[in-house]
Image 1: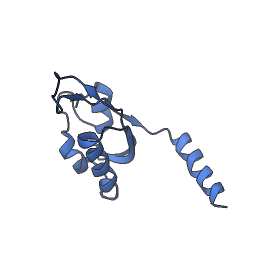
Image 2: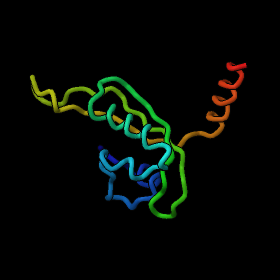
Image 3: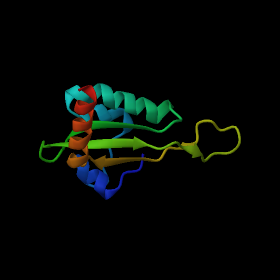
Image 4: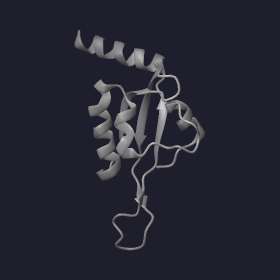
Length: 112
């Protein structure tokens, strides 16, 4: 998984110290671990796009950030027959709280 400077900043980590996919659950709020595990499974085994919203506990100051992880469908990078050589583009983005509020309001209206 490639980490950019903005990704390090979201997690409150110094550049050059990426979090392995297997360790991602240890950086989130306990209630969000199932969502992160599902997202991790999609990263490692899925071939379809997937997304998950979760709260990251920043390593530098302990503050919590809501982010969205996005996995886009990967494509082969290896030779013929190499099923394990896949590029899996993924990003972490801060959640826009305005969009989140609109989505929640939309769900409440749909329930009524």
